[in-house]
Length: 335
Image (cartoon, rainbow, N blue to C red; front, side, top):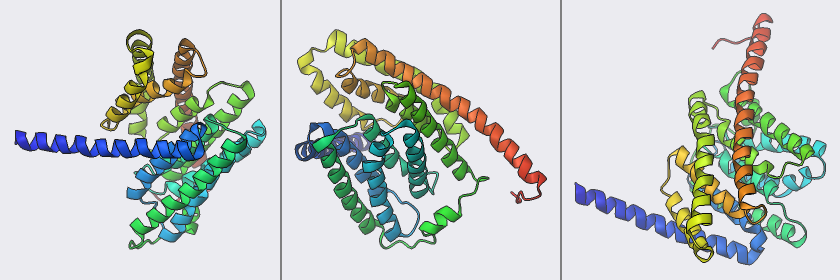
């Protein structure tokens, strides 16, 4: 039994190492083709490739494949459009987020929306202009088409009862799924709007916290809410200890790569958040001072968590009063 366990562990490490090498090669090729400023596009496409190859959007495979390309188009164009003016951003972000959620999250037990929502937030957080932006658009659209084709090939033999029209027909404010769409769309779009007005330096970090904590199921939300801020503090402390006190500058890229490999084995949410904070600071210190980046990271997680908690209670009240109003009109359907 012990030999079997060690063999299984060894195979798991070997397979993940090969996957890790593929990821490094993929990002390197992306950077060569699109430029270093567009490395985030490679990350988005890589996440989409892994998720959608084994994922299932839950409706007609041809329409789903076109929807994948459409959502990558949203990621490519709408964050740039939203940057024109905060009021324009409020409208564009609201429509974009809601569309992405409807098209990608019919099955609330899966995380199909993760690729597209992360892509949308990353493109806002790592904005580029000129030639870099043109290359980003081409990369995301071409990559989106390739991923859509792979998705079609992987799912073409499946039979689906739903089509894209059904996704919109099934929007119903009494359902857990629709309420999740509404909460996430409202919290993200309003937060982005306020942060744009206040010129907050790292809106993306607040948005990512909101995305991570705004969930359809209450039990998972409460567990994540409990550990989010402590994990952010641990991740920033780890970064500071390693890169400011222990690891010399010339060896820091090796540590970052090794941490990325170890992250492939992490399944626990608390540990994932520690790694995410550690990883995010690696790029943030190129813009801010180390102490400034650490402070901003912790503050952003605190603000995002407070927004989600406040939104949770506010929407509970809103939905409760809506149900009472609807029931008084005699229209509330049987459970």
